[in-house]
Image 1 (cartoon, rainbow, N blue to C red):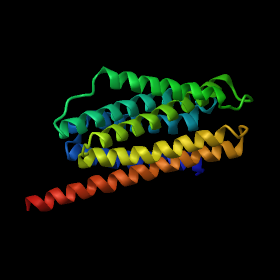
Image 2 (cartoon, helix red, strand yellow):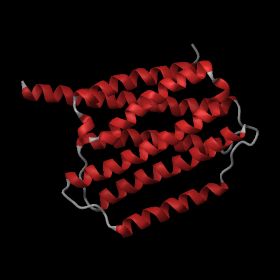
Image 3 (cartoon, rainbow, N blue to C red):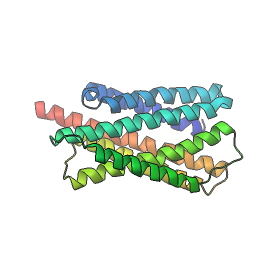
Image 4 (cartoon, rainbow, N blue to C red):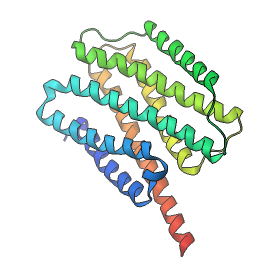
Length: 226
């Protein structure tokens, strides 16, 4: 079994374990976007295994769809974390000036991509996917940093589950952004794909971290009721 197959398989198994913990603890009520994101990850992981084995020639299109879906769910999770944190501190959502500020920051960050390079000796679909991944990685990391900055200046405390989810996403966003920056200095080849495996491996680590966190919270809850 190659590492290209082993990592998606490990991620699928970990996703199944994590989903069982989330369902058992009724996390889908408190964090429905995060729960839905894990359902998406399980489905996309199973689809990735099928594509790798059966439809490898169409992997470019699958990769483009997969990273777009990942980005959409991750943004939804970040929005959910912000709302949960505000609700935890009994505060209202920020007004329009804050939203406009965030949009301006996002536009500046995306504009900076004009200076980034991407390998040109790849199929057009894969080239588009690489550029979209660069956009998503910048926006995701910038959005999380903005969320942390706003909560800090307003003195907000984070609920335990929201903090655990944000910590895992923050680690993954940082690794993914670093990989995309390093890609701008590489030609498409073995080293390029090895860095992608590093990003995938980091998400497997995040899944293990979430499993440990939610398992411990379940144990603490059981001990409190005994």
